[in-house]
Length: 159
Image (cartoon, rainbow, N blue to C red; front, side, top):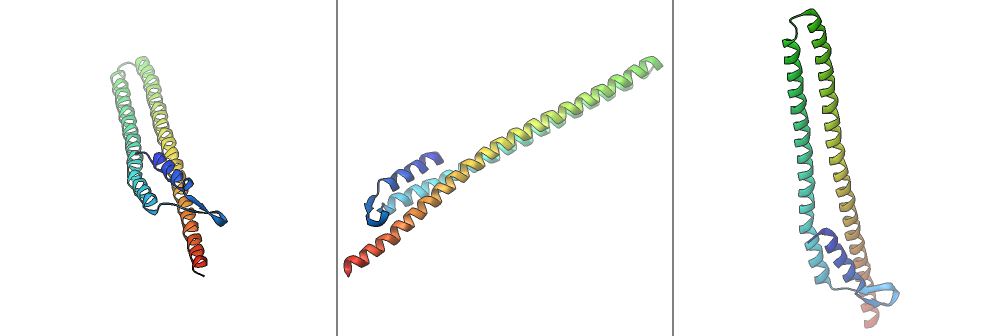
């Protein structure tokens, strides 16, 4: 069950509560506690997904580093092989520098793209978890208001 489904059910339970004077509601404590427990058990899944995204970002960065290292090694090997003749040597040096620069640019682009992707996913998850937490706090505040309102009504009924 997703976090949003649990929050929707929690909101629905609060809205379906019996209205009392002064804006208070009576809601099922067992039902709310059950929904809060489901929400609590769902959150580790969301955190797990965030960890998976971070792990994937790290893997992409490592792949980019490995590709860059392979390209640099290839460029270095090519450069060494072409050092036989002065003209060939000059051309090889230029080409090797271009390959190294290209490899470094590509590595930076791949790394930046992986970090931006991971940041976007983590930002989205941060927003989702923040919204879920805000909904839980709001539900608890409404429940606390409802519970404190019920006590006042019961005291008046006994008076």
